[in-house]
Length: 490
Image (spheres, helix red, strand yellow):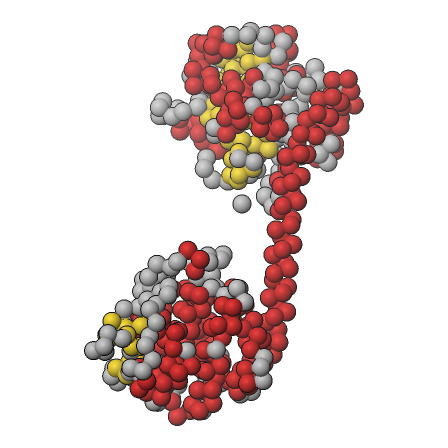
């Protein structure tokens, strides 16, 4: 029963519909009959009054926490969960679940034991059940006014029952199911509260329309105002104190996310307009020449924020390469010949692209690993088709020496021990920028690739997953993108 659950105030709340839950319980009984070592299936219910009680009662909380299945018994829990972003399809009350299980148990020849309520109520209930379900096997029954729970468990065990319905008051029934169900010898136990009184005809349940509207608690207040008004007044106030802050926090988080997305769209829109124009690489370069680098930086920040897996990284690389080289969107999916590209204009766009690094990181919104990984992939793809790798190396070295050191920092060094960025051309020849000796390379601050050959021979997806990158400092780690009531007074 690990599937179909969600966390609700530290409790594992079951989100299955009643029909599916009934089928699971019957399957459990059928399978456990063949394997006597299987534990007892403990079915518990949670309502608006019980939640604050459980928060203040460790034993009750433990009983609900350890239940095999904890159902939402009451619309208060269902509404609160939905307002907190948890999808609960319906409530599953104790009396409804019991009523749905009885005909199935009769068909499966499951022996049941009825524990709780008055002795006369049990007699009436037994007669009605035998009339309604002639094949139902009632192994035994006992009233709920015996204070010794261990004695009650022994009575159930001697009866040879397979399933136990506990009609004791809360929290006694929850604690009995938790602590004594294993001693009863049954393979299924659940608390049903005042269901015996209702099924026996001693208490009138709210009309179906009231039940569907979630107003069953109001019916109980009308029927027993002196008892129910104080009970609900205290319980619902405690419930509200618990759930209201959670609901507010959930919707505050949603509003912040929407605001962030709106801001991102506002920042990206101008840049996307520019990208869609002819000669996009000139527009990009001119943007920096005109002192407007923030537009491009916003676009890059939004692009990084949209990355959630290695495929997104490769898509971003391809899009940026095509934009820099003024190629169609699918250009890199086919062979691109070097003489088809205006490399002089492309070099200007590459310089503008490299200028994004400091601007994006200075804004605090960029992730250094993702940014350098994406730019490294762009440089690698452009290098593979560049007609003059030496000139391309000089553009990178002069425009962004620190980035070149971090992305293409090699194992090889000059005789003076100064590290030099090593690039590899189409022919496989290593190319060192002419000014490498005069411009010492700073030690890599965060990430280091041991040689550019390793970068060019591996797939970028594995690079993005950390196969070729070192461990990040804590502040620069990659950001992973993608958390009622019983039916009667009893």
